[in-house]
Amino acid sequence: MQTESDMYQDTVRILWNHQIGPGYFQMGVTCRPKYAASVPGQFVMLKLPDQITPLLRRPFSIHGLLSSSGRVFGLEILYKVVGEGTRKFSRCREGETLDLIGPLGNGFTVSGSERRIFMAAGGIGVAPMRFLAEFLTEKGFDPSAVTLFLGGRSRGDLLCKEAFADLGISVFTTTDDGSEGDRCFVTHPLAAAVRQSPPDRLYACGPSDMLRCVIDLAEARAVPCEISLESAMACGVGACLGCAVANRRADGSYFHACIDGPVFDSKSIAL
Image (tube, rainbow, N blue to C red; front, side, top):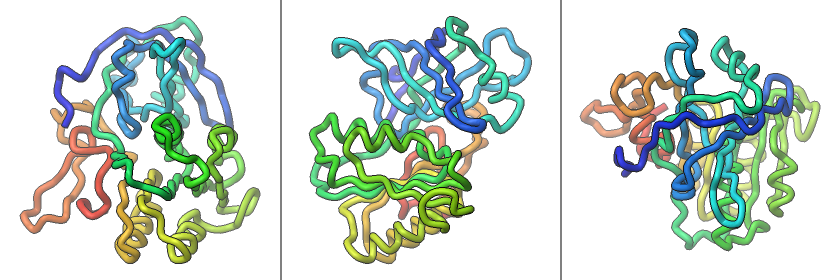
């Protein structure tokens, strides 16, 4: 469990902010070397300095770490322009600064005993998966034993395919409109693959409808599964209680995505 001593508030410098697709941007920012201890699935909260709007910080999954000679000096985020806040982020330029708090939340767990891993990502849900893929390969996991099922509305929503391929990970793509890969939801080929040969662990991030299907699939096949929720957050530290997630205990209690997640065991929550 994360403690306050693990978090940092900093003014960070933008290293780049590139558009990589229709409405999608990849940003690199400086960070403390201690971010080397962050794990895939954790996130940061970013805010434009001296801006009234957006008033609150925005949460972004850590997309990857930047290092030189074994020393971490920055991190990447991947984001989609969905409102005025992210639109302002998209206009940021190299050398400008942002207010950052992180790393926050709890990430994916890797026991080390897994032999085959499936990852499923829908749209911007691919953001934490690239960090996870890099983490696995750095830990010596055989990338040929990892398969990514990547889905999007159209070809322009299929992000980072080359990054996974460069790691040696197989990528299976689907689109809603058939512009690339199979014309279906990404859960369809995932379900077929799980039925044919269940993996030792399944990781997923994407829209709630997709995650509900993943949860049902994992339970039906008794596959250990962790999901990362794309939750709206106001504070990121459990103070506002605005990111409540129902858990399955009969006492009616709730988790909070920012401090209990955003990664959860699929058997623990109700979507």
